[in-house]
Image 1 (cartoon, helix red, strand yellow):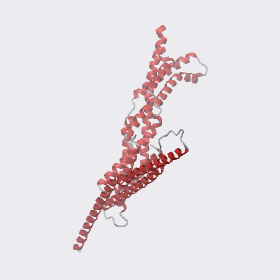
Image 2 (cartoon, rainbow, N blue to C red; image 1 turned 90 degrees about the vertical axis):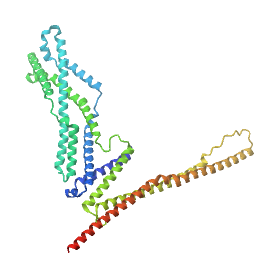
Image 3 (cartoon, helix red, strand yellow; image 1 turned 120 degrees about the horizontal axis):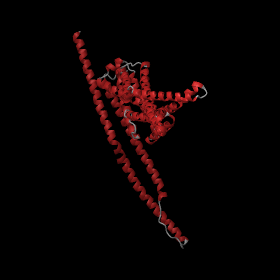
Image 4 (cartoon, helix red, strand yellow; image 1 turned 180 degrees about the horizontal axis):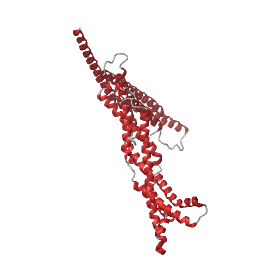
Length: 436
């Protein structure tokens, strides 16, 4: 999307959300006076706004991490490297278990260390990843709750806005809130603790200088390497994959939809803005009435808005049509002015020509040029006349006629609303007279 158009669309979308935010602040008594259909339309739009905004916010939060995603091949290679390192650093426990195997003790210990490393690394990676994604989801739900507490809902639309945001996060990320399998953490921690204990016992037999602290640090080194590798894999592989999947799920709730072509986005936002503006006009009439006293009921207000909108659109179409005709005239003038420069005579061999022959040939070419320009000018004028008299007017005539029909229909509804109001008030006056 080009930048100017993108900025205009962003401005238009902000304007659409402003309508929704204004409705969320309406007093409840105003909401209760709205017709059911109008209230239903507002409820739907508030829901779309709430879900779209929380989806956009979550995608923005997850995008930096999701961008770190690496290929499956890199992920497998990293796990293999970690397992190899584990065969050298995480095999103290297996050395004790295989000490009686003689020559096969060391290979068996290294194999056992590799398998133990793979298991601890896999469980630790899952544990760390689960903790981080659960924390992220809880933080988002808490942020929505804090926002709702800071700005308590004033009507049912505001309540729906927050409830749908919470419901969407729970729907998309609900699995993150499920309790983590304790076996993963217990297995990873217990095996790490066992390895550290055996390492500590072996090192203590060596009598290293520095006392217990140095021995504890030395014993912790293999376990630290494995857990650092698990944290790295969680950050570089597991979280990016998980967040990329969540982003894809959230994209279906964005408005306008993700990946929509620029022209369609512009048209969609324009139509949406027009709908929201119409609803907002009707809501303001219900809330404040008509200061001039001309509009007596909602039917008249609705018809009056549609009438003015159709009249405005008709005027815009007529201006566009006149502008198109004017631009066509300017184009014609430029094309006619350029004709003399476009004439190309066939090349003639003038070898051996006399000055008299040269002059006569020049005069002949000038006559040909004038004739060619006159002929082309006539063609351009015929094309221009057809464009101005037929093509351009026809391009706009259907749309203008449709706006005229919309105006007539809106005018009819306006008069019907006025007649209904008059009949209702005449009946009320009659009842009051009879009672007197």
